[in-house]
Length: 231
Image (cartoon, rainbow, N blue to C red; front, side, top):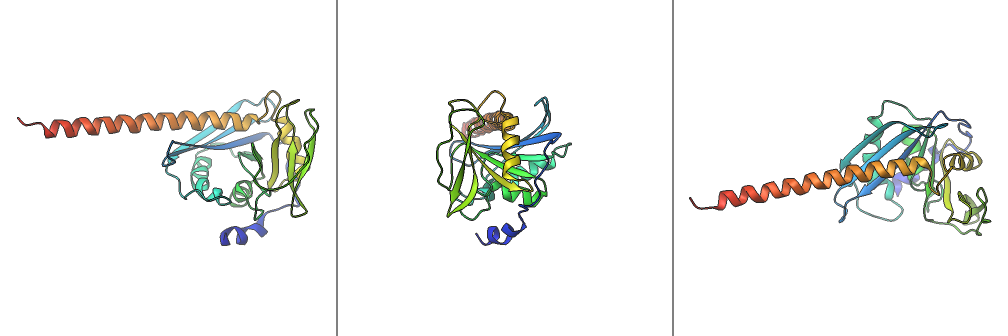
């Protein structure tokens, strides 16, 4: 919490961010059952075609236990390692999580933005803090999410009649621009294409890692069995 309080003043809420980014990155993390293994993925999309132009993934163990409000510390090391493996520097980071819509106004999107210096926004499937009115059913409709009387994000409808997503600023982006970018990234589905591609990549990587771990365990059992046999 002290680290979050120390870094929070570094969040840039003045720069409106790129209105027409050339590349946009999605970041997501998948966890194995039991939570002892994770895969962090970053996919970089061409902002116009939404085709994946670069990607990276890393598999490892969570760096921090699960504590509500401190989720960034659990995922940040693996996500930063994946970002370092990219050959393309994205113009915008889109996190599967929150930015200012956080109890201490320093969610994952803020943390990543401050550490990398890149514009960042959070797009979450579920809320963490705030109260709001339901937006209209039409795509593009939104309502403000407020916490303690402060606007911390928007509840945005990306598909007609479908559950909204929760958009918040992370770093070097305005809320208006963040909303526009999320709508540009959701031409067909509720979630941004950045999130969808990163989700697939980390899930595939996690499945491969779990399979490799299972095979290694089976090999170890067989070796022990062979050694325990009497001649």
